[in-house]
Image 1 (cartoon, rainbow, N blue to C red):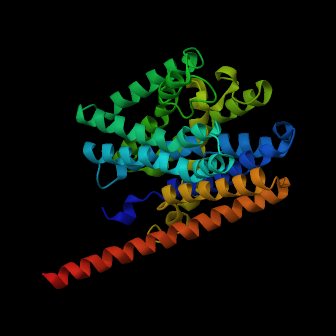
Image 2: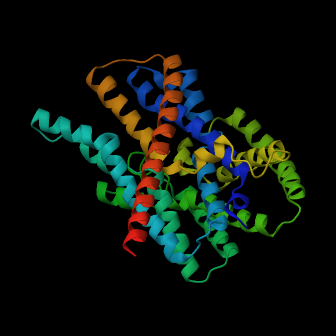
Image 3: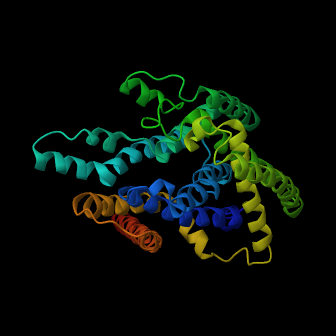
Length: 364
């Protein structure tokens, strides 16, 4: 099976759509927070809850990561663990360039330590969860656990993680380090392992099922019907009882097992719809969303650095307030710029590797 056959175009399209929503969500939640009463504005709710929570984004990315592990050319436990460690380290590098560098600079200018510096340098991010998830998956693979066993563990953790949210908390150190695994406080935990690992596990299981299935149309037809039913019930109840009604304190990051099922129904519904949408397309053609999805991690890193710069310089320092319509335009500009810069970095990296290989061939 060649590399083009390994790529799942409907999964790439799901990730690409999530990238667009992610960019709109992040720019709005960071920049709009400087306007009084922003949380009650419909546009903020649209960007934060609809675009940023329900229509893919974080849970879709983690589900896709699980599927990607199964279709990866290198699935060895050591490779997964190394990838996980790199993502963990990258999350702290991102913290430094996103807000940490500006907090440190302000501390130096003010001549005193700014308390927000610690939060800027250490805040939890989906990158550290993704890193932890890959490390644990690699360890499970070392223990020779089957994917079905990993899925069962993910389900158990999710069932435990929901009721456990906000129960155990103590001082900052405890809240922060335990906040990697379960929700301690809203400030010191985010994308916690107990509640979010299930998305990776379901992705792993689905990836294996997809590999073994010959009639993919039939599989996606069944998934589309089942996800449509669950999705309709979930969205209907959500419209009645409010956002994240199945989760303690309606906190998205502490999503319960039932909330996870609701999110996954959205992912599977979109994935199935995209499968039938792209079914008659040329499978050997590389579409724009496939090209974009090859650089998701650098795009994510760069887009946050740009948002951190805008937020720190224009909002905090110059105290400029941006209207919502401009924020949506800005979000698209930030995403396009991030894609361009990630492509540029990729080209530079390829040229360096090519030169290195040519130099090695000349020496030999």
